[in-house]
Structure formats: structure tokens, C-alpha cells
Length: 163
Ligand code: RP5
Image (cartoon, rainbow, N blue to C red; front, side, top):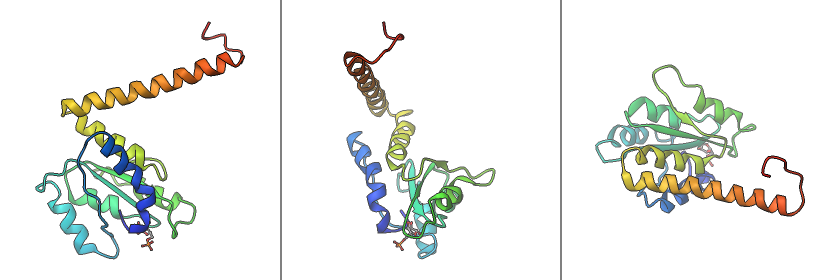
């Protein structure tokens, strides 16, 4: 992430990776304040064994795009609505509107949890255990929604679909 002030927004990515038993590292790499560290981090990421990079930043959020320009690993960008964001669109567009050839898989504003799930899905495409955890997670989501359908129905809300 671009700053330690991004941690409250980025924490859900770490939490969901922990839930999926995926090891990760979490640190600060600022595109603007530590450009040399950015280059070193991104250029060494693959040889250090990383598989996916989640990069979160706010305002003029150049971190995800610059990381993607340096590494061949998949990069997931999290636009952060930070203290220097106008309304969040600045971070979204900075991360989303990448030029052809250098993609950043951009999640929703402050969408770090989905970034973690997407990273797990990428790993799960090759790792059988992680793949099974993703399937179980989605089944759990489905069960939760179907339970809510039952509760609404039991409270008398008209629902012709689930007769
Ligand atoms: C961005 O500037 C960071 O990613 C953060 O969202 C924002 C503010 O950083 P701090 O001034 O709080 O360090 O580069």
C-alpha cells in the first residue's frame, strides 16, 4: 500500500487471505515518496516467490500501475478513498485507466476484501487446496442468501418465485 494510512482500508485483504490460509506480506511502498523502493520491490517480487500483488493507494494512485509496469505478476489495484482523495474517483481512475498492455485488475473503491478474494482465486486456479476453499466460500455465500430468502418468506413477504 502507498501509506500506512491505507491500512484500515487494506486490512480486509489480509484478513480474507488469512481465512484462505494463504501466506502474504504487507508493507508500504510509495510510488511518489519511495520510487527506488517501488522499482526494487516490483522487480524482485517474482524471484522472491510472490504470485500476485495487491496494491492499494489513494489520491494520485500510481502505485498499482507502476508495479504492473515493472513486474510480470498479476497486479490487483485497490483504489483507496484517502485523506488526499477528492471523492475517490481520483484513485479509481488513476488505477483503472491503464494503457493497453499494462493491465491492473481494479476492484471497487475501498474494495480490499474483493482484492483478497481475487488474489486467492488466481492462486486457486493452480493450487487445488486453495481452489477448494474458494468453492466452499462461494457455497457459503449462496447458503447465506438462501437463508435470507427463507427468513423474508417466513415474515410474510410476497414471493411468487419460491413457491
Ligand atoms: C497515497 O496518498 C497513499 O496511498 C495514501 O492513500 C495517501 C495519503 O498518504 P499519507 O499522506 O496518509 O501518508 O499515496
